[in-house]
Image (cartoon, rainbow, N blue to C red; front, side):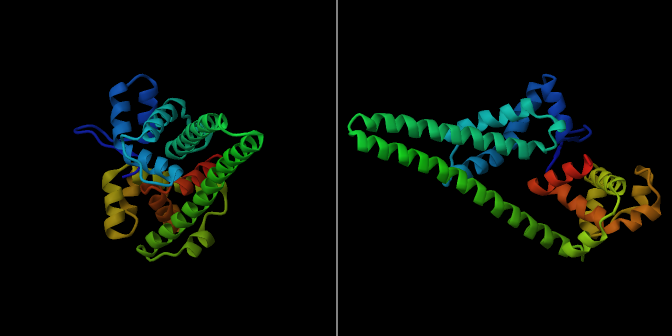
Length: 249
């Protein structure tokens, strides 16, 4: 489950709490986090390279180093989730690696070309760079569309629609932030989240014990809280970035 790391006989840590401990020097936790997110690293690198990446590939090593860099540099003040931030860092480092190799290969080829050949090789290098950038932009747009479609499908399982969530979202920023806070509370509590996913409804009675919000308020924003809980409990990277912006309004 996204955002939570579980340890035996210990209270679950969310991802931000784990990062804080790692940045304070917890190397064991850092290694565990990297190990847990190896599939995410491989998937991100593969997306850039347009082919399946194995752990033995140089590009995978670049991605691993970049993910570790993201852990050490991440700050909640950046307004992004760790994984969204890490995805950007990994893609940048892998693109830099590809560009470097392309340039080095061109330099080797240039020794056997005349001036016109040099210009051709330089043009190809520029085209390669533009192609990579264009590919990433197209891929990001496609991933956003896929996320929204998957989110819509998840909502249908709760008898909700995307249009309902848009229409019934709290109008005031404070109300939206409060609803998102309740959703985070649900996602950080295994029992509450289990109830929501199993029963397909909010555990309102239990929420009254944990959230400092009236039952009336919870019921009024029920659909929005469910939607936010779905986003926070799944790997919806782009939608989670949107929520970061909402909280900072």
